[in-house]
Length: 116
Image 1 (cartoon, one colour):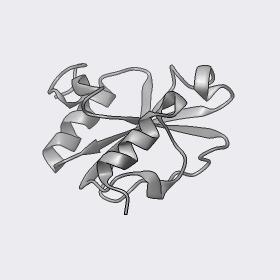
Image 2: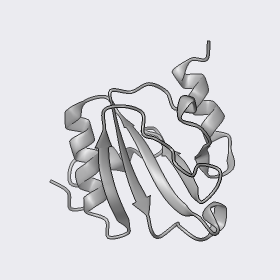
Image 3: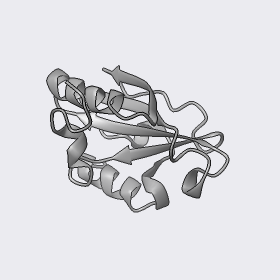
């Protein structure tokens, strides 16, 4: 059985931290997803929409991450999930990027980007 840490290491070893399938995501109480309009259409997301996924340990943490996403003009379709998000179009028209707490810690700090 693959541990959550091993799952994260597998994903972050890929270019763009790409998540290819829902079952690759480690279990978490909450997930926040958002469409990153800035990174969509170029780089690893060439000709694709780039969605970011952030795992959260609590409802409060998910609220902070969501507020920060709402505070960034390039983030759209921000959503908090209590189950693993469906990855419609993964490997095709959409690129799903995992942002981890250790590499993207600003997302988890209150009011980083105007969020409340």
